[in-house]
Image (cartoon, rainbow, N blue to C red; front, side):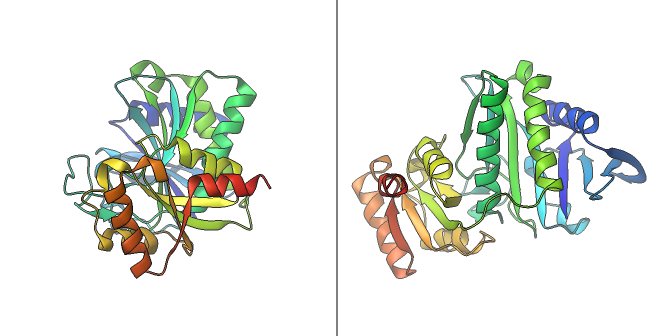
Length: 283
């Protein structure tokens, strides 16, 4: 059973929570966590849990909750401040853990959930004609050491949009679908990704146009320092069986590509190019 997480420090999460309570059949319980009331969906018993610390610092949750999926409803902040709807897995590819989690540690995640959320966000944005960007992001920030898979679904990218009920409604609808309906995707091929920018536009094409589902993505800016142990983590911390690594071939330099290819060969993981995967899906 999933658990929905929001934070009192996260305005977007609180806006999404408000929409969940309005749109869903959530009821107050007599339970609290960190002094905050826990709400429970009437049919599935999926809770909405509000925490007091930042979501990216929520590595303590597995001490209190057993679940098959932590769904983090979160804000997204960017310099562009564009209205955005986003999804990604948490984790730190490098030593810098200033945004939560442990250095060089990736969280458990689900490729199928990320693919489904991105597809549903895209569809709802089109249906509502809301002028928001929709994208997946690469793996970044905490928490990283929870015992259950995690996914961040985010509303961005400034204070105005964190309070926008229209964007929050879309995120809430996605979350309600995740917790009340059986998985809508089947016959998927599971992969991890390497290369490209932080906003994973080429991997969006893979997720939206093919039957590949991509879990952890390592962008170009981390590849100089990535280790084989981290690649093993990306494989092992995807709950589905990873069969392929998909490379954004031009989204990395030659030395990075050679390093990644050598490590993947050592791990007997088959390599595909983004362009190849997308082109083959059109045949």
